[in-house]
Amino acid sequence: MCGYDNNNDMDTDNKHIDPVGLVPKVLSGEATPEEQKIVDEWLSADPDNRVEFDSFARLWDITSSATAAGDIDVEAEWQRLDRAITHRQTRTIHLKRVLQIAAAVILVSALTFTGVKITGPILKRAPANEYASIYLPDGTVVSLNAGSRITYKKGFGISHRQLSLKGEAYFEVKKSNLPFVVSAGEACISVTGTEFNVKAYADKPLIRVTVTKGTVRLYETSHPDLEAVLTAGETGTYNKSNRKIDMQAAVNLNDFAWKTGILDFNNTPLSEVGDILANTYHISVNIDPALHDCSITVRFENQELDSVVSVLKSTLDLTVSRTGKKYTISGKGC
Amino acid sequence: MDHQDLIVKHKFELLFREHFTGLCYFARKYTGDLDSAKEIVHGVFIRIWENRSDFEWDKPAKSYLFTSVYNRSLNYLRDHKKFISHGEATAQNLVVDESVFTDNVETAELENHIQKALRKLPEKCREIFELSRFESKKYTEIAEHLNISVKTVETQMSKALHLLRIELKDYLAFLMLMMLKNMNNL
Image 1 (spheres, one colour):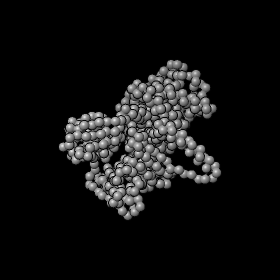
Image 2 (tube, rainbow over the protein chains, first blue to last red):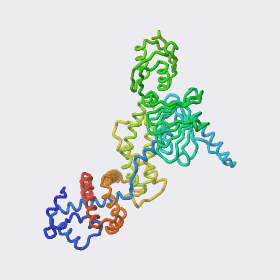
Image 3 (cartoon, helix red, strand yellow):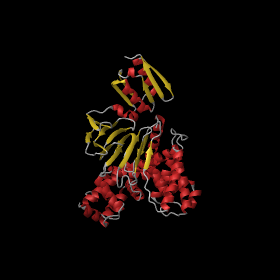
Image 4 (cartoon, chains in turn blue, orange):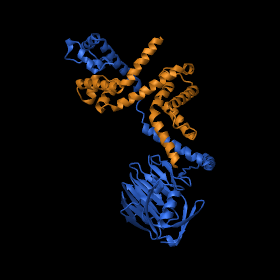
């Protein structure tokens, strides 16, 4: 088909005005009689010009059919779908839970009918042996480690952004004017928009917060004055027994291993390796105390537990026995 | 989620991102409005997700997607007992006229490309073009609204049309073919 250059063939009487430039005016009905005439002359000068004009006219027509479309925000639609399928997943996995919820709904309806107002918290949990991604109504993404759970009240993202965490989660917090507050038992974490990991297992003496982006405030739930401000690349720990907050200007990659699949041991004592493996692969690890101080330096990326174990075994000359999800490690010592 | 699940999720997301817009424009040809069209398309994707273990992820899915959206659109029309003025067809002749299906797939994809092409225009150029084309504003009104000269509006309109034509070259050629085909059928 002919190109724009064809306007060299234009009627010489009107060489000061580009007829092709007038096409939109003609199409939108805004051309003056003079301008219309220029275009008409151009059209009759060469059949190719007619073809070119037609292609513009066609373009003009089809752009009108696209009009009413408006933009479709594919990103937003994807987020919406992703939320929908995430809900569905938890629904199908926890059929028992659905029945419980159904029972609760009946109870709530009954209570509502009798005039009792109920605004129960919303609970999201990860299955026992794998982590789950959860999309909060404000656009925040939470990766929940296996067996961990979060709860929040109605109106999340609208009137508040407060949730409570049991276990471990990585948060990618959407920026907003509403402060985002994670209550993790004895300690709370408050942020605006940032990314961080919170380890808050009820049976562990420390609550550990690792910041990868932005700034977070870590404070004691009962005494918010006891606080520490952590920025990206820092780790803060709240010690439940002596109620102290410690800060380290470093981030341990292994804190995210459960999410990233990267294990990075650098002269790491075996006792710690055991904890990290347990947290990453959702197993329990028992290590002979005589081996606790043996250390190892090795890096794994997305390795199966079996291959990690076999590397450890041959490097430190260990004996590993396994019953189901329980691993027992023994050896001669180092 | 284990590794395999993540791969499936990723493929699912790619499929969605590639086809969502086109499928919505397609469904709108039957439903007449974009909101119900979006719901229909979401429904199809949710169904795919629910049956993800049986879905053949490595086969081309386009015709499956359009057929599913088509069937759901017909159900939607049946349930809403609605005759549409916007689309090219009504509930009755849709069922009998399968060729409309193909045409609608093609034009829906074309609309998708137009929207993409519009998004590629320089911002000022696009704004002027949309004011004229979609809000039926006169050149003088646009000039006043944006505090620019009428001459600039003219130049930008012409620029917009030329850029769009370059962007949509292949589809225009295809459209011309379709028109010729239709004329021969008359």
